[in-house]
Length: 226
Image (cartoon, rainbow, N blue to C red; front, side, top):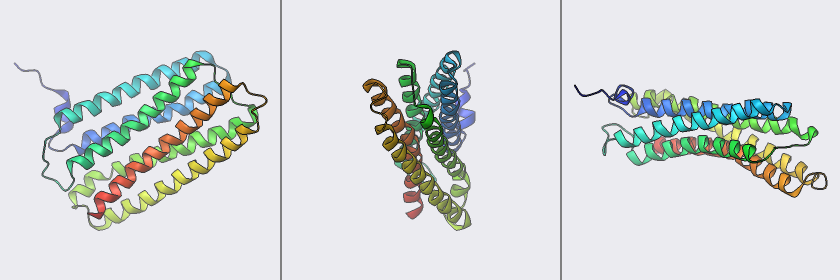
């Protein structure tokens, strides 16, 4: 008896469900960065390592879903979405989880320090970037309804509005990141060059999660315009 592939149940007759499952796992991976930096600023090294391990574990799960979807994706789909668009959306979603993993890797590499007065604006940036990832997930969860309606009608209008909101959230994250970077420059005399460089890199990566989330929305906007 041939063992049944558990992915086939998830895949069904459409790649939309596994794509939605993928963004759900990606969203979970990104959200773990909040717990990571809460532990960092609390000075709890054991919890920091626990969150790092969880991020790596969930990112690996996202990779497995991505690889399974690519492997099982037909060359042509009898649905109003191009295979290349779907793969591009998948890759952009996955980049969010990859970026969360990159953040965790830097924190693991060296004791991560942020001046106490900058920790609150730092967490504002983290949470606003997570807002972008959450909004991206909400948008992707509308895909099955979009497919059912041929990417037209009220659902299409709602998704356009959701994408516009995602753009606004990403812009907010950009502004928070720029403000934080300017403040970091003012601490160049009190932070070691290596700590300063790594902090700037982490700030860039946190904003990168919001950037990739916005790219998912923008790609879907192109699909809706066709």
